[in-house]
Length: 184
Image (cartoon, rainbow, N blue to C red; front, side, top):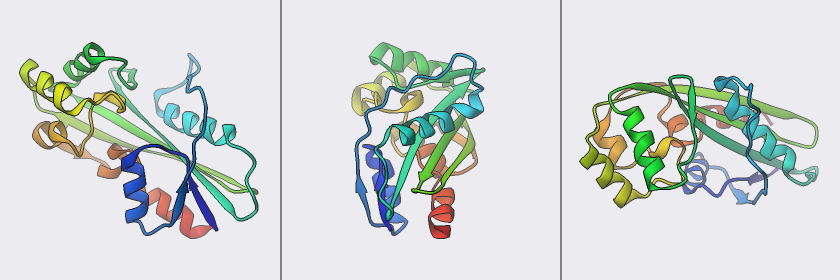
C-alpha cells in the first residue's frame, strides 16, 4: 500500500510519521467552500471529502488521506484568519470560553471511502489583549483554524481544560487514522 497524505500541514506530517507510516505528500487544488446550510458538526468531514473527491483517480495500490479542522464557538465556525486583525478578533472571542474543535478525515482507496469526524472541547482562560498581541506577532497563526495551535505558546499558557483528543485539536485524530489504516 502506498499512502498519500494530501496536506501541507507540518503538524499532520509529523503526526502521521510518528504513527509509523511511510507516506508521500501530495497537493490538492480545491476550493474549500461550505454550503450555507451545513451543520457545524458536519463541516470538517464535508471539507475532507471535498478534498478527496478533487484528487486524481487512485492506482490500485494507493490510499489517500485528507483532513480538515474546524473551530466553532457560539454556533459560528472560525476558519483560518485572513489577517492580523481577524486573528486577534477570533482569539478575543475564544477568551475565557469553551469551544469545539472538529477534525474530519477521509481515507480513500480505489474501492472504498472512510470518513470520520472527531470533536474535542477546549476551554481557554481569559486572554489579555497584550497576550493576544504577543501570540499573533510571534506565532503568526494565519494557517490555523481559530487562529491558534494547541502545541504553541497560547495553547500551553492559556488552555485550562480539554475534553477529547489533543491530536484532534492539533489537526489529525491519530487514533482514528491508525484504526482505519490498520484495517486496510
